[in-house]
Length: 393
Image (cartoon, rainbow, N blue to C red; front, side, top):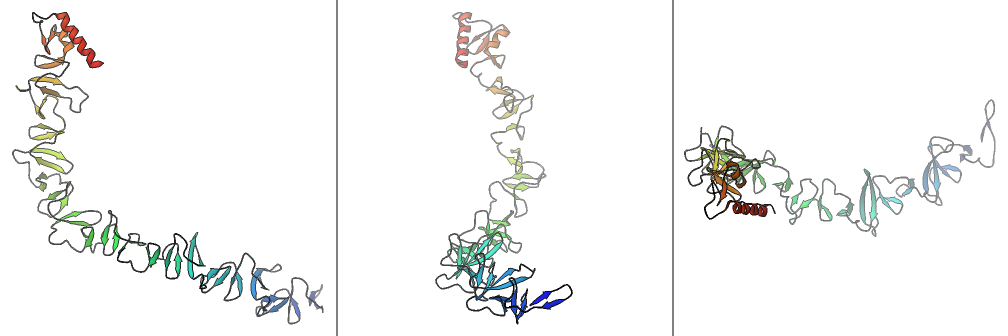
């Protein structure tokens, strides 16, 4: 045994080594040498004995290097690596966890290798069957299928089956059909077609449009191949096969075609629409006709008669009725007779109470100078008062 004095080392004979030291070649040492690194019954040995066959590496109390001990059983916080008889904190990547041990192959009663992924850490474990919400491929279980495999029901598969022939756009699952918002690019669902196959027929990507589909519509997914006419809400651009959502500003829409003309044909009206300037035989119901134009509001100096903006009311509807400012088009309306509560006065419809402002009385929705002989003025205004009461009750 080595012992230090004030001046040099002194060899001392002893029948046993002190605690914390091991015996190596009849000498007591604090650290076993690399050729015999394992401590077994107080001795430094190359291989552990049968009663303590496993090597457990722990930090040495007296040194920063690791101290390897022969043990009969691995500590609770460690697993046995059976291939090397070592106690390890974590099973190596080439091994599988089973019953507190790290094995190279799962036993027959727990034949499946479950690859667990948690917090970016991967752990392999032998299981009897794949857990719920996992996917099986041969003798393997996965939380998610590896990139080279695809999800199919509760399995991972190398090739999608005929019943689920398409690969989802995220490249992870076999599906029966692609979603409505996606296209078919060979056997895969995709957000859009590739440049090599950018033409779309029945949601499928092709290199070019078939002969029967002689119209095209550009979309975010690719170019739609279409049969005439262009779809609703689209128009055809003249001298091309392109369906467009709106015409250029210098063109007019005639029969759903954008044409390069200076004005609409005779007998048609010009109407602004979301697709461009439209030539139409009839203005939309919400618009008014002013000359050959369809407009939202008639000019302030005109009157409205049967959707037309006119300078004056005609003989069939001679009376001018002011609709008021609560309308989108607060113009004067031409009517054949005044509405209820209004009386005719000089070809205008005014409130019947305004007749008195003109020194007149009401007789059959007319402002007149005086009542007929069979009527009394007082009774007439009582009748008007009763009518007013009914209107506001």
